Length: 74
Image 1 (cartoon, rainbow, N blue to C red):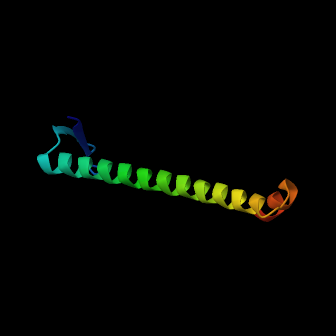
Image 2 (cartoon, one colour):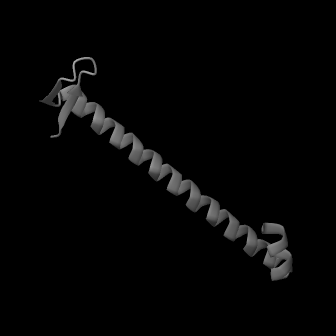
């Protein structure tokens, strides 16, 4: 468990205290949300790459050359 450091900018007083249960829960929820977003982004990128590979394969089956496919796909 991490401590919270509070600084009073007016007086310069620094206070250190343990995190409350609500602060811990909020931090854990934020970490879970961040992980879920990272997982979703990774899946979307993998899906896009799979779709691109599938499209390239289909273009090759249609008889396009590698140069023609590269010109279309980039």
